[in-house]
Amino acid sequence: MKILHIIPGSGGSFYCGNCLRDSKFVEALRQSDHQVVKLPMYLPLFADEHDLSGDIPVFYGAVSIYLKQVFPVFRHAPEWFDRMLNSKAMLKIASHYAGSTRAKGLEEMTVSMLLGEHGQQKDELERMVEWIAENCKPDIIHLSNALLLGLAERLTKRMNVPVVCSLQDEDVWVDVMKPRARERVWKLMEQGSEHIKSFISVSDYYFREMKTKMHIPEEKLEVVHIGVFPEDYEFSLPSSKPRNIGFVSRMCEENGMDILVDAFIDLKKKPGFEDVKLILTGGSTGDDKKFLKNVGKRIAQNGLEKYLEFHEDFEEEGLREFFKKVSVISVPVRKGEAFGIYLLESMASGIPVVQPALGAFPEIVNSSGGGKIYEPNEPSVLSQSLAELLSDSESLDRLALQARKGLEEHFHLNGQVKKMIKIYQSVLNKS
Image 1: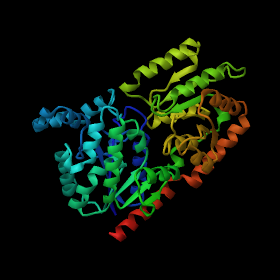
Image 2: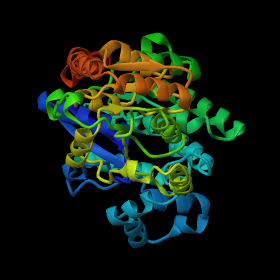
Image 3: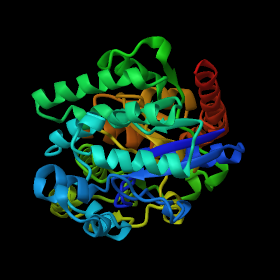
């Protein structure tokens, strides 16, 4: 089977769970002897850009399509100017600037993208479709998320192959928009769904969410959890490491890093935690500068600078080094998430997780047995949960062992890929 995955990139400026999910699935599909092509959009892919052939361009380059959307004069720019804006070097630089990965201010762009061949990016869509027709000729096309549904109708007509679409955290992007734009985007996504043969949610929780939000018929929805290869991670018991707390995700307000920082400040006021440090990793964008500055001030005001560490490298080997430094992980995302691959990476490394009772977190923790759930998502409650775990090394080690075992039983990538292949085959048999 020849599969084309169309994947938006993050530019490598922060820990991108969606990018990791897609890249790990592609790797596992290739190991299953299927041909898979990754086609990046907007920005270069996270971490594994070396996996891409130099012949595959980044389509819908973020700088170029933004300028063309906002300033019509750029729609008539010469090809050499477009190539310069869409160069991987330029796009990586752009990924670090404010606004590169947020919905606010990009409502019109999002609507235009969902309009597909009727939107402002119709020429770029045609360029992508022609490149696929000349260079790929897939049996099936897999869209990374429902915000790409504007591609589906044209891809289906030109390539005459079925298109499937993953579902993960579209609501995080759409629901921060102004009400009028938000309603239109959800409506366009619902309309675009008629060109999709199967939707694949990353969790049971998100299955229910998107069934309601997009009015997707249940028979058109499947669940394939995110997975990892446990053997890719170095397992060690928490008792063999310092009693440090870790955070691994984009360092921003939405991901609740300040909740963890305030919980840490509270924890340090309790006796018996004098040795505990907080280690943060996951990168950021220009939008997060003010937030990070305020977090630094909170730490300084409490005299805890020497107990805070920013671990800069969150890719591959750098992430493995981070996991060696921490005994427990918490990413207290304010509204929860559709999944959270960082939980699997942490548990594979023998690190229990402490998560709020939001989104898919209970589903993951209960299935794996590799952590604790707390509520409400407030610093004082998180602080108490962390204190209980860090005070009991035997419980921490027991949770670490359960985490690894639960991961292998429920979230091993081989098992999830088998489910995905069955969906592909079922779609192809019906086409």
